[in-house]
Image 1: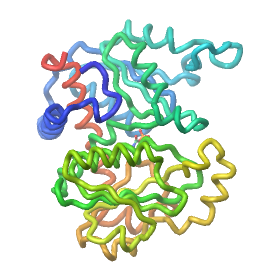
Image 2 (image 1 turned 30 degrees about the vertical axis):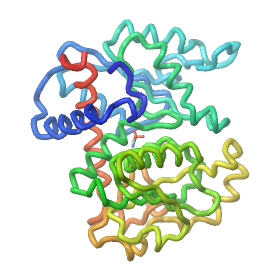
Image 3 (image 1 turned 180 degrees about the vertical axis):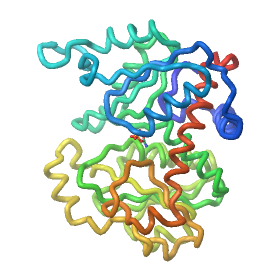
Amino acid sequence: MKRFLDLDDLDDQRLEAVLARAGELEHRPSTRPLSGRIVALLFMNPSLRTLASMQAGVAQLGGSSFVISPGTGSWKLEMRDGAVMDGDAVEHVREAIPVLGQYADAMAVRCFESGADLAEDLSDGVIRAMASLSPVPFINLESAASHPCQALGDWKTLDDFRVPRRGGKFVLSWAYHPKALPYAVPASALAMAARRGMHVTVLRPDGFELPAAIMTRARALAARSGGTVEETSDRNAGMEGAHVLYAKSWTAPSLYGRPEEEAKVRAPLREWCVAESWFEAARPEAKFMHCLPVRRNVKVTDEVLDGPRSVVVREAANRLYAQKALLVEMLGEEGA
Ligand code: CP
């Protein structure tokens, strides 16, 4: 496999193999299948977990990595085709990506949404263009529309807690955030749970429905796996019998690219902060999931985040194991 841009890039057999290998690597971390291999890490946007877990994972597998953060220690990069480069950016990705590929055996890139054009961001054209410029295997570390490494780690987290694939209820809930946030994580979490065969409910206030393209894709995945996808703004009905509440904020699609107008619609929704009372209709052992970072007492209360339902640290740990398994799949002897 030369490109991992979305969870769809792993067929069912490979996905199960990566999950199984992630479990093995968690308990037997000392194998070194990447000995002598180098991974270039290009971060156009900030990170804590992704950056640290990729560097740690490559090192644990016997390889090494280098990090490029354009604008803070390396040249600011231009990504637009046909740009007249008389601004801050002094180098184009059309050179930078092939050049980095001369020094590395694989490349992993984080490049968020433009936030201006919904259709363009949902097409994930920027990360796809970057991948097409790479002469070496390419991993998406979060793009405009997809965070597939997060989805892999989250799938493993659900398995770890024995949340049923078929029949398990997964609630993806909108939560308040002071800024308009992108669709990468909610789209990937929704697709992951639908593909896992779960009964998925998208819980959101009116006006914050996920874009139709994201819902349609999730419904197609659910139809194939035996799951279902529904949506509601009724919290009690949505949480009925839930095994998992996965919280995330996202932009109102009708106001995409208009953050000042969107902020006015979002402002009255501060009570969409996940609290213990949200779980009254859920299963007693229901888990709380979030990809992190999370704003305490804005998106979720201290009580939930510090309580027994919260599995957010486990999710972050699973990023390491899942990404190591992916690297072995793509760069190890069997995957090469
Ligand atoms: N969940 C996640 O990707 O975290 P970072 O943004 O810190 O990498």
